[in-house]
Image 1 (spheres, rainbow, N blue to C red):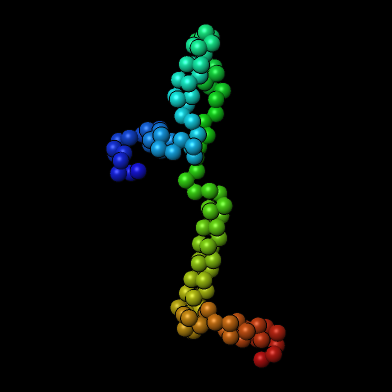
Image 2: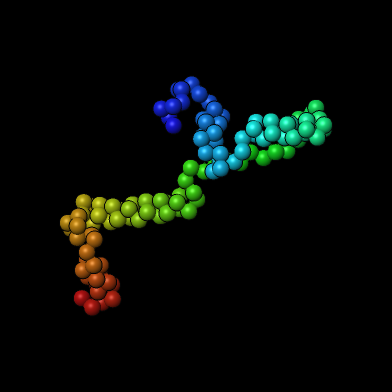
Length: 119
């Protein structure tokens, strides 16, 4: 999509292009909706009101590129990766151990044994 758009194009133009490509996923464009209603009103011989108050009351819905559940999953995975890298840096670089020893269960079993007074 970025290759199709000019560098000076606005967000509205990009959204319009995206909605024209996939109208079912992104809803009906406001301009198309207005044209369709105008045609229907002309058929019924009813004119649209001259003021734009009905346009102001319409809500334009934003389509999400990534669903909310996917954002939550990505944040949780990033938190898990940050915790793992933090353990490795703290145990291996700051401490006296090896980097990969921070991921072994024996290391934490040894720490739990010391805390419980078994060693």
